[in-house]
Length: 66
Image (cartoon, rainbow, N blue to C red):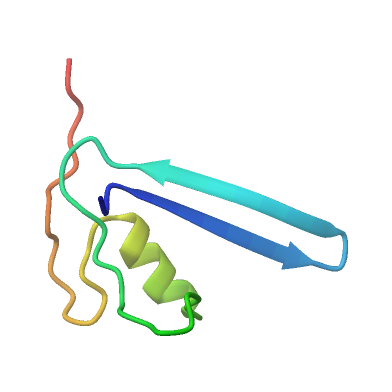
């Protein structure tokens, strides 16, 4: 649905799985045939903040809901 992203991080000590779900908006995800994407640290940061990293512009303004 585009509201959840899972990231597999690997280094010499092992693997880590990170997950983030958006309450509002959608992740702007690149289209790929291989099923995997390599992002720069800046692209990953923008993706997790809800910014379309191909054309940096916030898609949903994060806020605190009380």
